[in-house]
Amino acid sequence: MPLPQPDDLTSLVLRTDFGDDRAWDAVRAAVDAADEYPHATYVSELRYAGVEVQTLLDEETAADEDSQIGDVFLADATTMNDPDHPLLAVDLSDEPGRNFRVPARWFPDISANLSIANMDFAEFADAADGSGTFHGFDEG
Image (cartoon, rainbow, N blue to C red; front, side, top):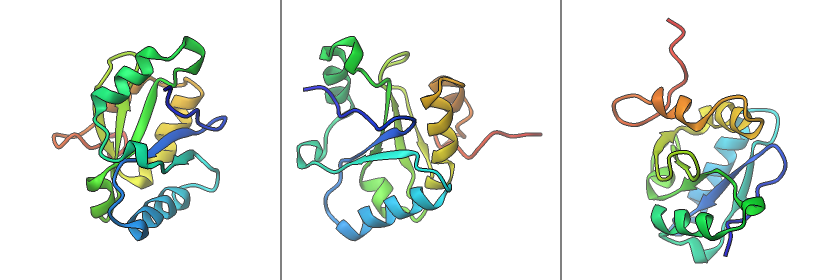
């Protein structure tokens, strides 16, 4: 079954942890508060509970080309429990499985640039710090 399609000019945020509905609400509120425009298509379906990245890669590979989405952001246990709500960004096309964390406040920048193909997933992944978390680009 192909992954759900995000709304136009948004990225798919897929809930994989279902232990706390209030935490899910807080994640969505944090992502939505990070910018005045919507950047996320939220999917909360129990079939994705605890889903492994490899399973998502397999689903994406099996989908026809018009249904493939290229990347996905997972709201997993780490996302739910960390006050910065760092989503797990996963590349599904260029370097399948490559991933990094992105705190909710940086999500709109990444989503906007990926959805219009202004930047590639790798550019953000390459800018992640030693912990594998993207905190913006160093303007230094």
